Image (tube, rainbow, N blue to C red; front, side, top):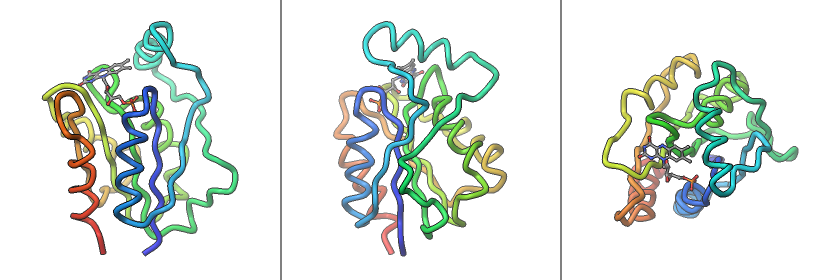
Length: 156
Ligand SMILES: Cc1cc2nc3c(=O)[nH]c(=O)nc-3n(C[C@H](O)[C@H](O)[C@H](O)COP(=O)(O)O)c2cc1C
């Protein structure tokens, strides 16, 4: 089973979670981005503003990454403003036709809310039901252990 782990990250949390998932699964790892610098307080505000826009930003992945070459793709993203971030949803929207049968979501967030309904709603963008997802609380939580447990749960 050839697996690709993808992540969008602003402050490296989702990157670390996806690195752990990739390590457990022996998967390839790549970042996707909309190319915007969202570091610091101004970047945080930019992320908030982007969350309220109706349109999706254009996103990209390293040129050598061939999505269709994988049996399984796991898409990591943070929560922004009470739901999976717009960059993650934009990725699904832009690349849904190139994604393999097995797609999983890994969503990181600070708070206690799980955002399950909003994570599942990404299936409407994907156009089909994802194979599964995990919602990972990052603050005051050993979140890399949660990422590892998720990966072990889907290991084949
Ligand atoms: C603009 C913005 C909005 C956020 N909104 C929420 C939120 O509604 N609920 C929550 O639990 N965390 C929220 N967070 C926190 C992030 O989801 C959390 O810190 C995440 O793990 C960061 O991942 P990253 O380091 O990969 O960017 C928000 C972060 C940003 C930048």
